[in-house]
Structures are given as structure tokens and as C-alpha cells.
Image 1: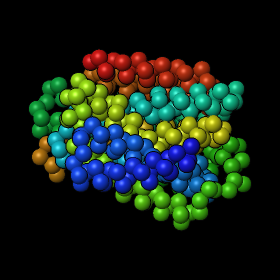
Image 2: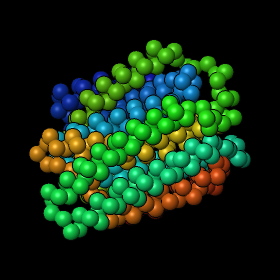
Image 3: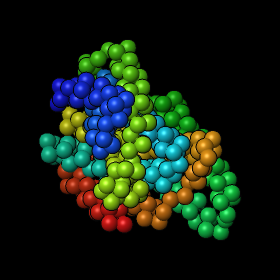
Image 4: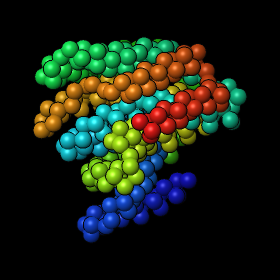
Amino acid sequence: MSKIFMLLTFIGVPLSVIGTLMHWPTMILFTVYCVSIIALASYMGRATESLAIVAGPRIGGLLNATFGNAVELIISIFALREGLVGVVLASLTGSVLGNLLLVAGLSFFVGGLKFKRQTFNVHDARHNSGLLMFAVIVAFVVPEVFSMDMNESRTLSLSIGISVILILLYLAALFFKLVTHRGVYQSENEAAHHDEVPEWGKGKAILVLLAATVAVAYISENLVHTFEYVAESFGWTELFIGVIIVAIVGNAAEHASAIVMAFKNKMDIAVEIAIGSTLQIAMFVAPVLVLISLFFEKTMPLVFTMPELISMVTSVLLMVVISNDGESNWFEGLTLLAAYVIMGIGFFLL
């Protein structure tokens, strides 16, 4: 599999540059861009897996989520610059649904096919459950409810205030997990992985991460310009492109890494990637995008549509119920995947 991604990278990235300079047909460019980003994401996944072995599952999962979300953050910034606020909000929704239902679902399902019962740190699961409830249900629902009786200016002010609080709380959560309570809730699974040998050394892994991120930034800027044409060609809405297409392409690194980790029975890392990435999207990426939008012509308040809100709240509640026991199996994974498909059909037909 790694050889296939290597081939796609060494073919896709040059083709992305050549195609852009020579103005190839938009649909071909869209396909090349998407394939190239996914291939680059595989390198990011391998690099973070190596760093996870050196630094531990928590930091490894955090690195994976951060660099995986960096792809979507970059795509979203360019989309905001083009005034595509609806696509950005939809992509944030898609990331929450994709991480909690698709990534976690595939991880639980694939890992469960090989191991009848898999375990992960129950203390982390319960800690993350509280943050998920806060980030999505409180911080996303409150602006929607209050904005009903507010004008655009006050709604934006409310969004800015909530964004600052979310970022501060996210930083506090990192300080809690990585500093004040690091190792306090270490599980047996985490201790068992210390003897593994990483594929790449620390220096090479960091270099690959940085190089892949720069390449993704260049391709993402061009990818954004193809959205309007692709939407018109297939009859897709901005909502569907954001929730499904942008979210899947933008989070390809986490998708691949979490599934591989689950197949290797490294469920602490797989769960940290899926839930940690969701928390980072809700508590850091989304509020940062709200603040960045202030520098563009069209600002982005933290107000989602009702289908987006209901889908995110439902996915959070389902994930909390399934993960709070610190165990997983293939059927629980299938349940999460079924929920994702149902919501995907809804957004496609909306």
C-alpha cells in the first residue's frame, strides 16, 4: 500500500503543478488534486506514526490530528478568501461527522474483524466525552439559538466571544493531558508500545510532515477554485461538497492512520486520532477560522444550518454512548458507519 501512495505522490504532485500551469480541464484537475492530497496524507500518517512511537500515543495522536487538520484548515482559509462560507461551515460539519462516525467506525470495524474485543483508555474516553458534549452541543448550538433574535453584527460578536473561549479551553485541555496529568491515566496498551521501532527517525519524520504540508497547501489553493465547476457539473450543493467531499479529502491523513492503528490493535492512538481530531476541529480550527474571516470581505459567524447541527449533536451522543466503556468491536463500528451513510444520503438529497 505504501508503494502505491508513493507512486501516486511522485506522479500526482508534478501533474498538479503542470496541470495548473497548462490550464487542464477543471474536472481532470479536481481529480488530480484530490488524489495528490490523499497520497500526501499517507506520508503524513506514516510520519506521525513514527513520532507516536517515540513520543507516545497521546502526543502521536495529537500530532496526527494537528497535521491532518492542517490540510482542512489550509483548504478552508483559501475557501474563505473566495467567500465560500457555506462550504467552510459544511466542511467543519463533515469533519465532525467524518471523524466520529466514518473514521472511528472504520477503525472499530476493521480492528474488530481481527480482534474480537479491543480496549482503549477509558479515562481518556470519558474526559473526551465531556469535551465533545461541550464543544459541539454547547458551543455550536448556543450561537444558533441566540442568533435567531440578533442581527448579523451581534451574531458575529457572539461568535467571536465563543471562539476565544473555545481556543482557551482547548489549550487548557492540552495542558491538562500533556503536562499536569500526563501519565496519570496511562493504560496498559500505552505501556506495551514503548519497545516498538519507528519506521523513520524523529528528524526524517518531522521533515516529511513539513514537506507534505507545504505541498498540500499549494494543491489545496488550486483545489478550491474547482469547487464551483464540479458542483454545477454533478448538480451538487455547496453543503454536500463541504460535508462529504472536502471533509474526506481534508481528513484523509487521519482516516488512513486511525484504521492502520486499529488493525495493529493500537486503539489508544486510533481513538485519540478520531476523537482528538474532532475536538481540535470544534475547539480550535472552527474558532480560528471565525477569527481569520475577520480579515476577509465576507465574515463567518459560528452559525450552522439545522441539519448540520442535528447531525453533529447526534454523532456526538452516539459516539459518547459507544466509547464510554473503553471497549470496541466490529458491530459498534458498523453502527457508526451506518449512521454516517444515513446522514450522507440526507445531505446528498437535501
